Length: 150
Image (cartoon, rainbow, N blue to C red; front, side, top):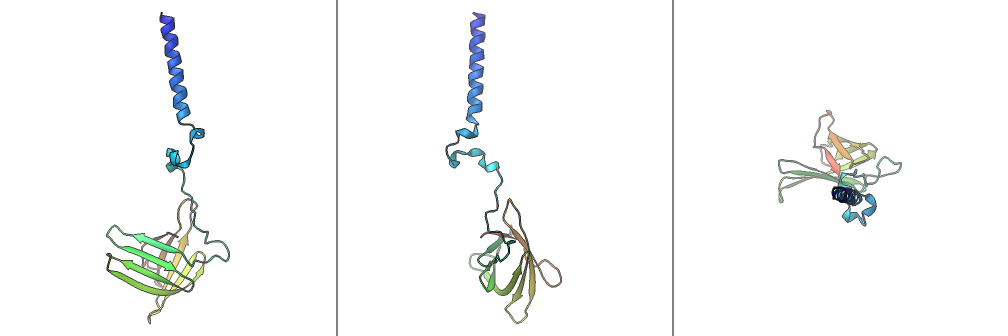
């Protein structure tokens, strides 16, 4: 009787072990929605590579969100860019700049009479979106670090 009980326990342990191992097998994933472990994989930067020759910054959007409730955005079109500082839904400050771009540097020149010059430096990553830091002519940081959104 003891041998039969021990045999049944051994079969039960082997069955449970094989079911446990099979349940975690990558081959059992039918589609991406069922892949619960996918969140632990790196999120590759799927945005265009700005470091490639003849690549333009036109059409890109960069954003930064503050814990104090304001948002900064800069969006580039073919000739100029628009900087938006949004403190609340109704309180927006806009500024227009012309720009020149040669990776990794963007030089912004204010379209106002003051012709303020701001220089941005892009840092690219393989596993996350690019970011950019802006400094004025005195080498002081003028805006928060912004992350590329498109």
